Length: 254
Image (cartoon, rainbow, N blue to C red):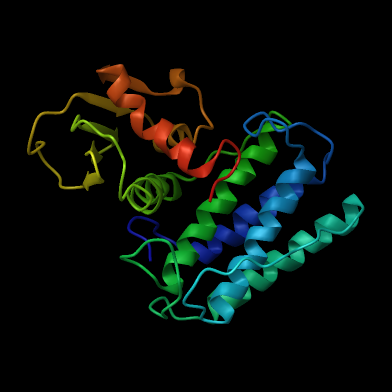
């Protein structure tokens, strides 16, 4: 379910979900800098739609993707209550489902409910940062959550969505935070991910390093380039971040 989180991902989901709700209640009309064109209201509606869709995915043990049509209610108070209701339902459904229960996901190597427990924790964390950024006071992402999130975005997003027509040229980028390292190598038809400790098995064209929260949010496009330290080939260093943005879109953390 999770490589690095030293707590239950559902606790992360609850905590981050409530931080998002608390921040949103300060002003639904505020613009959200990381999500151009969106207001806080748009982010809350989006996240709740994702929560509700994935809750139904897991509840029904669906083996194909389902997209649940949702219509957010009018009025800020009603929207916030709707969001909290959807969050509580998602947590309840995930808590009642074993990690290894077969459920569709886009990651071919992990089509289980555990995938969605981890994914929803990070979906909510990144969008919590979005909402808080509308007000300028962003709560630090816990180091263990951020480290797990680095692994998740590289594996469950970058690698999982790069199975053909990648156009990579074999230049390896190392992402470092503390004693953790991930080496990403884009190939013409895939992206390779190496987590092995110790020296790199081959040449590394660039290294990107930062504190866990900064590196996590930089990969998601939520921090400026100045928040990380880059050594080596700049174009190689930013290729994974740019591809993640193309995969997910400029606003979406799914």
